[in-house]
Each structure stands twice: as structure tokens, then as C-alpha cells.
Image 1 (cartoon, rainbow over the protein chains, first blue to last red):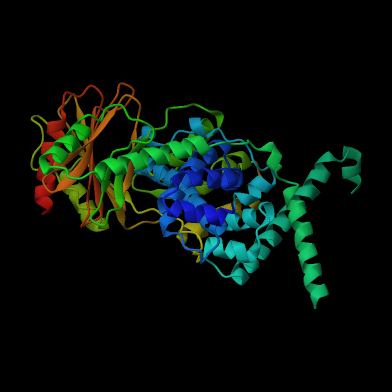
Image 2 (cartoon, rainbow over the protein chains, first blue to last red; image 1 turned 60 degrees about the horizontal axis):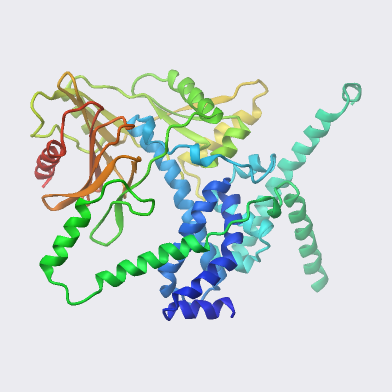
Length: 192
Length: 334
């Protein structure tokens, strides 16, 4: 059965069909969340919440956008909430001067999902820009699909992604040059 | 024409492949399986809905059942948080799992930088700082720019009130009712700090400009310096805090503006909803690992101010003491 047919079945009340939808999307949504939030552990928790939210809202889904775009949109908004909550906790800690209010990093052992130097450059992007890049580069989504997910025109997405990639290219080029310099023998560096 | 488009696509694909080379491959990430856990939550929710919809239910029986449910909330289950909704049905206050204290290298590093930045401030000053450390910034990309503030503790209540007035901070006044023996100890006002805009809104705001400037400074620096600080001028207050003491126990009251709050609830602590006049509040009796004994949180929907009352460990105060304080505050605000 196609995903869209399963969605209609769930909307009709056949709850068990939702399990097939979760199975179909869980890994790709997990990978997306990993790259967006930079943490595999946080991403795994987020995936469960995302699918639960998806089920809770599924009766309101209309095929004006693809189901794929719809579930990614839920994923993006949920990750954003988590990232903001991290930020809010930092703010609360500062407001209330209580270290215990801070969300602990214990459960947030960050496993680098992106090796440096890309991690460093991605960390300079806003969550929105990071999401665009991740969807385009790592999830091979078209600008039309990304536009549906982020509620932007494909052209706006294309321009933004192009600008981000240009930025990244410059930064990575510089990193490569520095890496080459660092790995050259000392006598060669002195000559150049 | 088609050839041009094809060439552009090929270039884009090549660029993407180059970028992918810098990232972990998908096969190197975990394989997850969450279907059963998700479906379990869904079936649990559906089951609760079915019970609520059962008819007929006598009003008194339903109320009694609800009271039993509310009163029986003790140790929490992962998905069962105490929540309060506003008149539009949106969650405004919720408890959530508290993080446990953990020492990790990155945390220690972050704390050290914060202390260093804080030491550069005089009371009443606010600053933003950026740390030129890729590991740290990758760990917490959202908080690359951090804001710190050195508070002014007003020993005089009148000076505190003047500061509230000067900065248009939430008007947190001394409650009419306090437990016996408690007196004003200090008052503080916390400034409105620069914040990032929601995604998609790319207009440069103060937060973005600060971050840009500090990153540029860091990039341009040839030295081994890691910490880059810029003082931030402020005129508007975002929160206020009052401290009362009876010589043994401290009592704190905060007021801050917000759309809602998530209240950390650690293992061993017990949360419940309580009614204070027309308002609902969340009361938490702390477990043994918490740095407080009692906590009460509520939101004044009209003003958009969240109030928190908390004491410290070893306090002999009880839930009703905090409720009495809250009642007097709510009565003063109406």
C-alpha cells in the first residue's frame, strides 16, 4: 500500500496503519534530526515525539502538500522547539542564577555526525539555513520539495542554498589550504 | 537551453558530493527502531480518550475521578507531565524531566569561560561573549553567542522599586502575606537580553549583529585568545527577583515575561496542579537531590508574567505557605 493510502486509512480510524508510516520514515527523519541538532541521542528522542505529533495532527493533513513535506515540517518545527528550549534554559539559568535549572548535557553526549571542518561552518548557520542545506545536500530533496517543507518558494530556497554553499566552499577551501600547509614538511613550508 | 540546465544540475551534484565527503555517511549513523514505542504511546492516548468519552458520566463521579488522578501524581512517568493550559487551550506551563548534574570536559570549559567573562563585569552590566572553540560551538551551535549579566543586589526595597520603575521590569512587589519571621533581604532586576529571531526572518537584529562582530573579531585575531566579549547596553528589564529570609530559610520570588515555561522535575520530586483563586498553578515538592524544598509556579495570562516561588533546602515551609503567598499576590494584581 502506498504511504498516501495508509495516511487516508489512519484518518479513517485504522490506527494500526500508522506503524507502517513510522517504519517508512523513521530512519530518514532520524538522520535529518541528527544533522540538524548535532546529536544522535537527542535525535532518537525527537523522532518518537515527531511521529507522535504526526499522529495527533494527521486528521488535519490535506494533500495540498506531499505527506513527505508535511512530516519533515513537523520534524523541523520540533527540532527547533528543542533547540530553543535549550536556549531558554540557558536564559532561565541566567535569569534565576541557578545551575540546576540548566538542561544537563549528560543525555546529550554529542557524537559528531559531521566531521570538522564542516561542523564548524554549519555551526555558523542559523537552524533554518542548516535545515535547507541538510535537506538539499544530504537528503537530495529538490527545491520544490524543500519549499513545501519550509513554506518558501522554490526560487527563494534555491537562492538561499546557493549562497550557503558558496560560503561553505570558501571556508572549506581555506581549511584545505591550511591543512596542506600544516602537513607539509617544515623545509617545504619555509621555501614557499 | 536544456544543456545549460543539465550543466547547472551537474555542477550542483558535484558540489553536494564534495560537501558530503566532509560528513559522516548515513551508514555510519545509528539504525533506529521506534515503531513500537510510538504505537504504544498512541494506543495509550487513544485509550485515555475512549475513557473520557464514555457516557453517561455523572458530574460528581467525574470530578471525584479527576481529583483522585490529580492527588495521586507522585513520581512521574516519562510521558506524564503536569500541564496547565491557557484559555485558548495551549500549554503554558509544564513540568519536564530535569537534567542531572554532570561533569564533562565541555561543561567545565563552558563554565570556565563564563566565569572569565563574568569577572570582567561590574554590577548592573551585561555583556555578550563568543568563544573561539570549534568543539564547543559544534556541541552547542544555538548558543554560540552567550549573554551574561552581573546583578545589582538592592539591599533597599525602595531602590529595588526605583529600578523596577526605571527599567519597566515586571512589577514584582513584596507580597502582603509572608510566613512569620520572613523579611525582605534583597531585590534584583534582570535586563532584557538580545535574542535571535525565529528562522526565516533574516533581518539583522542585535543578537545577529553581536554574533557577527564577535566572530569577525575572533577570526581576525592572530593571538591564542579564545574569549571575545562585548558589553551590551540595556535599559529594559525582563525579570525581577525578590529574596526574603527569616535567618534560617531563604524564600525567592521571581517574575519574568514569557509565553510559558517548562519546569524541570527531577526523579523523586512530586508535581501537582493546585487551584489558587481563579488561577491554576503547578506545585512541586522536591526530592532529596534538589536545591530547594517547595516550588510553586503560575502564569498571569493577562500580563504574560510567570511567577515562581521557591525556598531552599532544609526549609520548614509547606505547600500552603507558598499558596498563601501566591494568593495574596494574585489578589493584589486583580
